[in-house]
Image 1 (tube, rainbow, N blue to C red):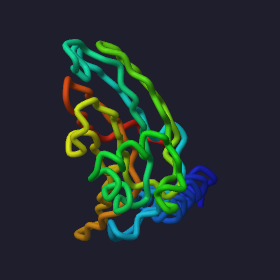
Image 2 (cartoon, one colour):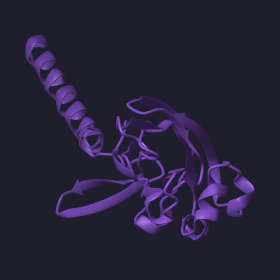
Image 3 (tube, rainbow, N blue to C red):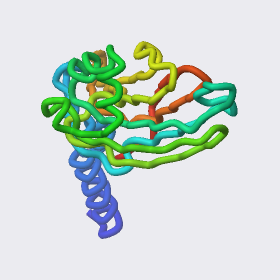
Length: 203
């Protein structure tokens, strides 16, 4: 066999070997990895702390807290909660709302993971960026309206659960992870409302 033909055969053999050994690796590289802390059920989501995982945009109407013929400033307390039961109980009465405005975490029996008291003036806009606290599943706000109607003095939204679908051949697997929240706190003349959507990705 000539040296040229022998060299060609060797090169062909090396190329074939590389193709065989690299094929599984290429196939494996194409497989999407499940998200960190991904759960197979929403109820099993791990609510870990997330830096800057909560943004809050507070917007006050020009006729905020209108009473006695003029708009007034208002006290608002923001909460991150693991459970809504105690907050909802207090928020159902005027005296309970007054307690919530103080921001005391002990009032909520361990369900309150963070509180922030904010003083808002008519027409004011305030933006906050906060960490999502470990275990936090809900964001809530209590507002001290002069009319004293508890039903219009509080609101809340849950932190979203992010879904990721991994497709592998004919099989689909859905993973659930804790999402970040972009919350809006709207303060009208007589009521507070809270809205929320998916925020920035903390990963």
